[in-house]
Image (cartoon, rainbow, N blue to C red; front, side, top):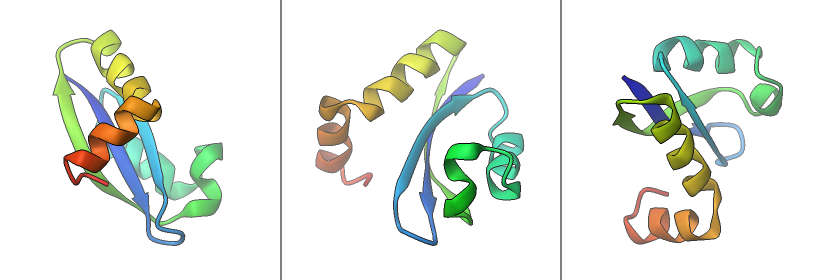
Length: 80
């Protein structure tokens, strides 16, 4: 299984959108400071996740979250 996920920064309240295979390992990397884009925003909490059977589906969903349509969908569904 692959995941599309949203992390929330405890520090600034902002969101980070991503996709991966092992969400627990990925969250550890984010919180250890191994991911440049979230290093200064630690600690991060898993806010939302969706399961997909392929990497490409999860990646497409990540990019949808990053789009204006995705932002509007996340707001409408009270996810963010």
